[in-house]
Length: 198
Image 1 (cartoon, rainbow, N blue to C red):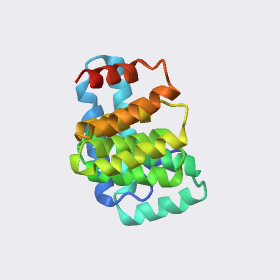
Image 2 (cartoon, helix red, strand yellow; image 1 turned 180 degrees about the horizontal axis):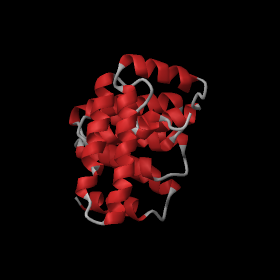
Image 3 (tube, helix red, strand yellow; image 1 turned 45 degrees about the vertical axis):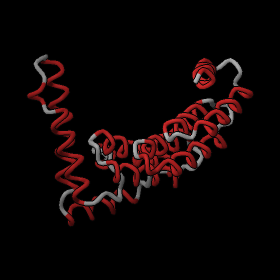
Protein backbone atom coordinates (compact mmCIF):
# COMPACT_ATOMS: atom_id res chain seq x y z
CA UNK A 1 0.00 0.00 0.00
CA UNK A 2 1.39 3.36 -1.06
CA UNK A 3 0.18 5.52 1.83
CA UNK A 4 -0.99 5.00 5.38
CA UNK A 5 -3.94 7.36 5.51
CA UNK A 6 -4.20 7.16 9.30
CA UNK A 7 -0.58 8.27 9.59
CA UNK A 8 -1.21 11.04 7.04
CA UNK A 9 -3.99 12.44 9.23
CA UNK A 10 -2.01 11.59 12.42
CA UNK A 11 -4.88 9.62 13.91
CA UNK A 12 -5.09 6.10 15.35
CA UNK A 13 -6.96 3.33 13.54
CA UNK A 14 -9.63 3.48 16.24
CA UNK A 15 -10.50 7.12 15.46
CA UNK A 16 -14.21 7.82 15.06
CA UNK A 17 -15.68 9.44 11.96
CA UNK A 18 -15.83 12.71 13.89
CA UNK A 19 -12.13 12.36 14.80
CA UNK A 20 -11.25 11.80 11.12
CA UNK A 21 -13.12 14.95 10.11
CA UNK A 22 -11.65 17.00 12.96
CA UNK A 23 -8.07 15.98 12.16
CA UNK A 24 -8.59 16.71 8.46
CA UNK A 25 -10.16 20.13 9.03
CA UNK A 26 -7.38 21.17 11.41
CA UNK A 27 -4.64 20.05 9.01
CA UNK A 28 -6.43 21.62 6.03
CA UNK A 29 -6.68 24.92 7.91
CA UNK A 30 -3.03 24.84 9.03
CA UNK A 31 -1.48 23.76 5.72
CA UNK A 32 -3.81 25.14 3.02
CA UNK A 33 -1.81 26.28 -0.04
CA UNK A 34 -3.50 29.72 0.01
CA UNK A 35 -1.66 30.47 3.26
CA UNK A 36 1.73 30.48 1.50
CA UNK A 37 3.11 33.19 -0.78
CA UNK A 38 6.50 31.64 -1.54
CA UNK A 39 6.06 29.51 -4.74
CA UNK A 40 8.17 26.63 -3.38
CA UNK A 41 6.31 26.52 -0.07
CA UNK A 42 2.99 26.81 -1.90
CA UNK A 43 3.93 23.86 -4.10
CA UNK A 44 4.81 21.72 -1.03
CA UNK A 45 1.63 22.78 0.73
CA UNK A 46 -0.42 21.89 -2.34
CA UNK A 47 1.09 18.39 -2.47
CA UNK A 48 0.44 17.92 1.25
CA UNK A 49 -3.11 19.25 0.94
CA UNK A 50 -3.84 16.75 -1.85
CA UNK A 51 -2.45 13.95 0.31
CA UNK A 52 -4.59 14.76 3.37
CA UNK A 53 -7.68 15.25 1.17
CA UNK A 54 -7.10 11.84 -0.39
CA UNK A 55 -6.75 10.32 3.09
CA UNK A 56 -9.90 12.06 4.32
CA UNK A 57 -11.94 10.94 1.30
CA UNK A 58 -10.86 7.34 1.88
CA UNK A 59 -11.55 7.29 5.62
CA UNK A 60 -14.69 9.42 5.92
CA UNK A 61 -17.10 6.86 4.40
CA UNK A 62 -17.78 3.56 6.13
CA UNK A 63 -17.54 1.34 3.05
CA UNK A 64 -14.32 2.79 1.60
CA UNK A 65 -12.79 2.84 5.07
CA UNK A 66 -13.62 -0.84 5.66
CA UNK A 67 -12.00 -1.80 2.37
CA UNK A 68 -8.96 0.28 3.25
CA UNK A 69 -8.75 -1.26 6.74
CA UNK A 70 -8.76 -4.75 5.24
CA UNK A 71 -5.81 -3.79 3.05
CA UNK A 72 -4.05 -2.12 5.96
CA UNK A 73 -4.49 -5.18 8.18
CA UNK A 74 -2.13 -7.01 5.85
CA UNK A 75 0.59 -4.52 6.78
CA UNK A 76 -0.13 -4.27 10.48
CA UNK A 77 1.71 -1.57 12.45
CA UNK A 78 3.89 -2.46 15.41
CA UNK A 79 2.73 -1.45 18.93
CA UNK A 80 5.46 1.21 18.90
CA UNK A 81 4.11 2.73 15.67
CA UNK A 82 0.52 2.59 16.93
CA UNK A 83 1.54 4.20 20.25
CA UNK A 84 3.37 6.95 18.40
CA UNK A 85 0.22 7.69 16.37
CA UNK A 86 -1.86 7.89 19.56
CA UNK A 87 0.74 10.24 21.05
CA UNK A 88 0.82 12.54 18.00
CA UNK A 89 -2.95 12.64 17.93
CA UNK A 90 -3.03 13.47 21.64
CA UNK A 91 -0.66 16.38 21.05
CA UNK A 92 -2.95 17.67 18.28
CA UNK A 93 -5.97 17.41 20.57
CA UNK A 94 -4.11 19.19 23.35
CA UNK A 95 -3.14 22.03 20.99
CA UNK A 96 -6.79 22.46 20.03
CA UNK A 97 -7.71 22.43 23.76
CA UNK A 98 -9.68 19.17 23.51
CA UNK A 99 -8.06 17.95 26.73
CA UNK A 100 -10.44 15.08 27.44
CA UNK A 101 -9.75 13.38 24.09
CA UNK A 102 -6.04 14.21 24.36
CA UNK A 103 -5.87 12.41 27.69
CA UNK A 104 -7.60 9.33 26.25
CA UNK A 105 -5.05 9.19 23.45
CA UNK A 106 -2.12 9.65 25.88
CA UNK A 107 -3.44 6.72 27.90
CA UNK A 108 -3.75 4.59 24.75
CA UNK A 109 -0.11 5.41 23.94
CA UNK A 110 0.90 4.45 27.50
CA UNK A 111 -1.09 1.22 27.31
CA UNK A 112 0.89 0.18 24.25
CA UNK A 113 4.26 1.51 25.51
CA UNK A 114 4.04 1.69 29.33
CA UNK A 115 7.79 2.32 29.76
CA UNK A 116 7.97 5.34 27.44
CA UNK A 117 8.84 8.33 29.63
CA UNK A 118 7.66 10.91 27.08
CA UNK A 119 4.10 9.53 27.09
CA UNK A 120 3.79 9.39 30.88
CA UNK A 121 5.19 12.90 31.33
CA UNK A 122 2.82 14.33 28.71
CA UNK A 123 -0.24 12.82 30.42
CA UNK A 124 0.97 14.02 33.82
CA UNK A 125 1.44 17.57 32.51
CA UNK A 126 -2.10 17.52 31.19
CA UNK A 127 -3.41 16.60 34.65
CA UNK A 128 -1.40 19.48 36.14
CA UNK A 129 -3.65 21.91 34.27
CA UNK A 130 -6.61 20.86 36.42
CA UNK A 131 -6.12 21.58 40.15
CA UNK A 132 -8.62 18.87 41.06
CA UNK A 133 -6.35 16.28 39.37
CA UNK A 134 -3.25 16.85 41.53
CA UNK A 135 -3.22 13.26 42.75
CA UNK A 136 -3.37 11.79 39.23
CA UNK A 137 -0.53 14.09 38.13
CA UNK A 138 1.55 13.11 41.18
CA UNK A 139 0.95 9.40 40.51
CA UNK A 140 2.15 9.74 36.92
CA UNK A 141 5.24 11.76 37.84
CA UNK A 142 6.06 9.08 40.44
CA UNK A 143 5.63 6.42 37.74
CA UNK A 144 7.94 8.46 35.47
CA UNK A 145 10.62 8.39 38.21
CA UNK A 146 10.44 4.59 38.22
CA UNK A 147 10.65 4.41 34.43
CA UNK A 148 13.77 6.58 34.26
CA UNK A 149 15.54 6.96 37.62
CA UNK A 150 18.31 8.98 35.93
CA UNK A 151 15.99 11.78 34.80
CA UNK A 152 15.57 14.71 37.20
CA UNK A 153 12.54 16.13 35.33
CA UNK A 154 9.83 14.02 37.02
CA UNK A 155 11.22 15.02 40.46
CA UNK A 156 11.19 18.72 39.58
CA UNK A 157 7.66 18.58 38.18
CA UNK A 158 6.30 16.49 41.07
CA UNK A 159 7.67 19.01 43.55
CA UNK A 160 6.10 21.81 41.51
CA UNK A 161 2.72 20.04 41.58
CA UNK A 162 2.80 19.86 45.37
CA UNK A 163 4.00 23.46 45.64
CA UNK A 164 1.16 24.78 43.47
CA UNK A 165 -1.31 22.79 45.57
CA UNK A 166 -0.03 24.42 48.78
CA UNK A 167 1.70 21.25 50.02
CA UNK A 168 4.98 23.04 50.77
CA UNK A 169 6.41 20.43 53.14
CA UNK A 170 5.77 17.63 50.67
CA UNK A 171 7.28 19.71 47.83
CA UNK A 172 10.39 20.39 49.93
CA UNK A 173 10.72 16.68 50.69
CA UNK A 174 10.58 15.83 46.97
CA UNK A 175 13.16 18.49 46.07
CA UNK A 176 15.47 17.43 48.94
CA UNK A 177 15.31 13.75 47.94
CA UNK A 178 15.93 14.69 44.32
CA UNK A 179 18.94 16.84 45.26
CA UNK A 180 20.53 13.81 46.93
CA UNK A 181 20.36 12.04 43.55
CA UNK A 182 21.10 15.11 41.42
CA UNK A 183 23.23 17.41 43.63
CA UNK A 184 24.24 19.73 40.78
CA UNK A 185 20.82 20.25 39.23
CA UNK A 186 20.31 24.06 39.00
CA UNK A 187 16.48 24.06 39.01
CA UNK A 188 16.29 21.85 42.10
CA UNK A 189 18.82 24.04 43.90
CA UNK A 190 16.94 27.19 42.97
CA UNK A 191 13.63 25.80 44.20
CA UNK A 192 15.12 24.69 47.53
CA UNK A 193 16.74 28.10 48.11
CA UNK A 194 13.44 29.81 47.31
CA UNK A 195 11.48 27.54 49.67
CA UNK A 196 13.95 27.93 52.53
CA UNK A 197 13.81 31.71 52.15
CA UNK A 198 10.05 31.75 52.78
